Length: 406
Image (cartoon, rainbow, N blue to C red):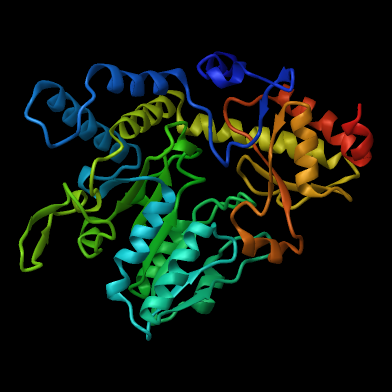
């Protein structure tokens, strides 16, 4: 993998930050976009900008074809059928659609299992559904490394469990949960497994058929694609059981003055109103870009970077690492006696972008025993040279105030 060549595809990597070369280590929050994605979106806006599945003219036909092609590309990327893929505004909307879409199937005798390591988007919708239906939301214990194991799932799952909703890769610690094994356990109890793939789909090869998961959600903007576009995958017979929670044009077959409504079949019934056509086209181009590099190459390179970063951080007495053994590009750490957001501000002074705080995952920090962490997340356009520079700035953390006035 030629990283120097890849870096030329990303215009943002040419930007300066505080007069210095920009070092972007916040890829778990969002990713930069290659020129190929930007051009694909621009082509829609400048060559065939039209609403989809509504117009009877040439550019509308082109827009229809490109939008349908985008769905096919997304489906192929995760080894699904096109009819199993619905476009949403992002991972959060996809998870909300699943939760609220199955609310009519839940009662006070039912249970939903999640974990304390989940992102807010995979916690709060289930809390609200619990308020509406009376179902219980309970938690799967984590092992010492923060993983959801088969053993711990078996400790809590029961015949009352209707849904298990977990992250494939967790957004603070970067753990990779064995969702294939967990799916087998869920299906023994006739429970659905919902997998939040926001942090896994951009970084490793995903085959939903092999994993046998029931639902998968992810966002375009973490896949080097546009913001405002996401994906909801579901086994088709399960998608058909979900109610759409957004209603409007394009998703209904008919309605009348007697309040009788007939929805279209999945996935169209989940796509109310004018869709993010440019976003879908841009996402499809981003996934093609990832395929061109090779997902196995991406995973291997990013894991090597993570190991290199951890090894360098461990040489510093002032740094506490919370996830040195996880096999992804996410590193959660703190600098001794420095508030996480102050440290992030220090890094910013030197042109380095990291995330600080609770990372939309408030429950996991109780598990770690800290209020906040710094998160550095690397990807395939990052380099060891950037890590070396980052480590030099980490050394200034012990003299935080002096560093700010250098």
